[in-house]
Length: 240
Ligand SMILES: Nc1ncnc2c1ncn2[C@@H]1O[C@H](COP(=O)(O)OP(=O)(O)OP(=O)(O)O)[C@@H](O)[C@H]1O
Ligand SMILES: [Mg+2]
Image 1: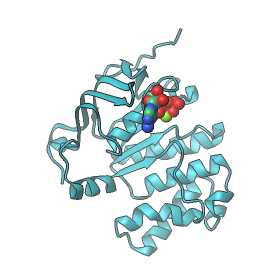
Image 2 (image 1 turned 135 degrees about the horizontal axis):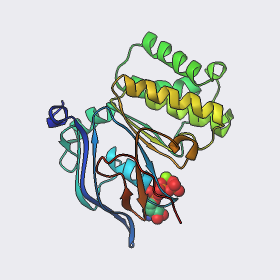
Image 3 (image 1 turned 45 degrees about the horizontal axis):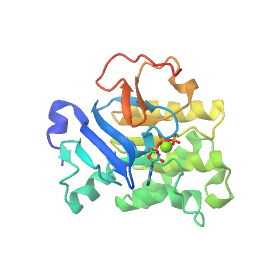
Image 4 (image 1 turned 180 degrees about the vertical axis):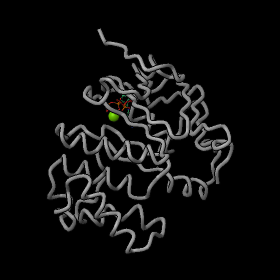
């Protein structure tokens, strides 16, 4: 399954990507970016800068208007439906709007990703319990997600994204509804997955996360990268 991505150590390569929405909204403009396998990076920038759009392009939920995106050596413009399905099993996406099924329980929502990969029921239960415990949600296993607070729903979305032990984790504002202690829990979990080899791309405004991080911070402004795109030492641009 892996192509040149593994040989070069490059998990993701975006070459001159633009995304325009009708009638003429330039969500991303001429974005080039390389992310190494096993890297954990932060994507930041003001509301509307293009962070979520970039994550959607990486998971091929949307196609770019221009440019090439390569994930694990696979050109997403040319990927076959079967290969896309295989690739998606290796990607965990925690969406900004969670995308949980409200009439299903926490455990059922988390199990969804694993069931697609034919994971054994006993393994699904074990992983679900472990993730819920790590995220402070052990007592919510059987609760319908419609009955959860926003912050709890956010953590379920994160648990679902991690449940399949993906190689690539895309997390869109994963701590937007969380207090500092719960944010710490989520970040510890992300760090652990990263230490085990996963590549993480985290879109965030959260200054408490960005401040003092040793990871690369990529800043988008009006659809363009203004800082961090080509593997420089993280140096934060301060908005005027
Ligand atoms: N489906 C869409 N149709 C039309 N315009 C869109 C669509 N999705 C995003 N946009 C526009 O593209 C731009 C980038 O949006 P995006 O959601 O990527 O920003 P963001 O950086 O994630 O913002 P936020 O921090 O508020 O989540 C915005 O101007 C937005 O209005
Ligand atoms: Mg967004």
